[in-house]
Length: 180
Image 1 (cartoon, rainbow, N blue to C red):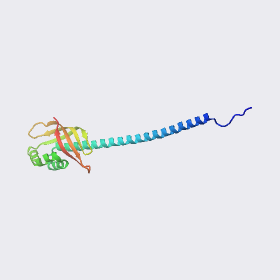
Image 2 (image 1 turned 180 degrees about the vertical axis):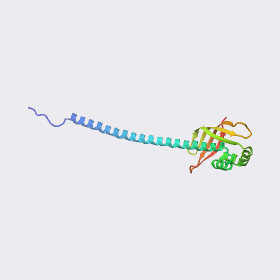
Image 3 (image 1 turned 45 degrees about the vertical axis):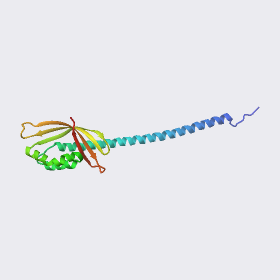
């Protein structure tokens, strides 16, 4: 009787080589896929961080513009000079060039007429935002009390406020434009 040969045949070796190559390719594909997944997660985390940072900066722009406009639209006789000093410290550029030289006449008119006003920003949103400046649009309600008038006057304004942010993080308002 003939005895069978116990050594693998060429077909068996070829199959083993094919399986080994397929296994190696699968391992390489898995390593590449894992690397891409980690890279995408890292990019997604960076995008989320940038968006959060941008949202925080927008909130800072909006809050600063709201604070300045509330101070600008609120008039108190007893603290008028200090209030105007504070406003002058919060503005720059064209707005400062227009407001600061007229502060004395503004204070004289307010003092002479005994006008008081309460201003409140009812809505505000960042229209355009950049790392160094933003434009904030807002709606402002103002109630003006004048001793010569029987009733207070309610007024509503829509404005676009330009806020500049300097390298040290300090913000200043450089423009206030009324929107018709």
